[in-house]
Each structure stands twice: as C-alpha cells, then as structure tokens.
Image 1 (cartoon, rainbow, N blue to C red):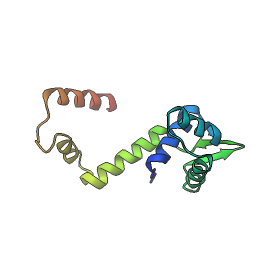
Image 2 (image 1 turned 45 degrees about the horizontal axis):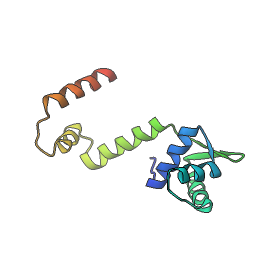
Image 3 (image 1 turned 45 degrees about the vertical axis):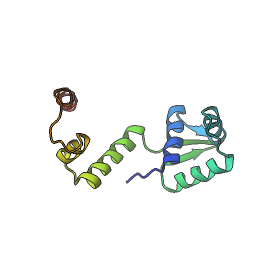
Image 4 (image 1 turned 135 degrees about the horizontal axis):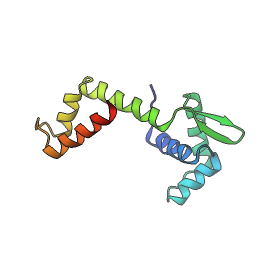
Length: 118
C-alpha cells in the first residue's frame, strides 16, 4: 500500500514531471512556485521516501519506483475500500450528498467512463 503525505505527494509530482530530479532541482521548483523549502528539509523527505520504497537514487537524481497512475489507482482503491466499504454505490451516493439520485448529466458522464474501461 502506497501512503504519501501532502508534501511527499508534491515532491513525487516534481519527480514525475521531470522524469527524475535532484534535491536542488526540487528545492528550486518549489521556490519558483513560492514555496520555500530548505534543502535539508527536502533531503529528509527524500530519505524517508527512499526508505518507504517510493523512490530510488542514481548519482544525484531521484527516480520514482511507481508511476503516477499506479499511485492514483492504489490510493483510489484504498479510499473506496476504507471509506465506502468497497461499494461504488456508497461512493456515488456520497458524491451526490446522499440524495441517492444522480443528474442526467452525471449519469451520461459515468456511462462514457464505463464504456471506455470495458
């Protein structure tokens, strides 16, 4: 099971977008976005992420072990299982604020999604 904190998720987004990134590149990326993180702080996160098996290191660059899609699928499944008892019906009901019925537009959107995965 892949578990990411909010900051780990942000760091993974950088690594995925750059197809591997050094600590300095990650710090610079956040600085460009207005989020100042110390080099040591990102290094601590990167070390933890390596221990969790989320990333590997080659020379000075860090690379993802899992694709973004792998992480999203596992986290979506975990949310469905944990919060909604593995029930898509319960999940969609919660999205619809417990009203039980989806709008015609939502139904059409779901049909398109289901059709694309069959």
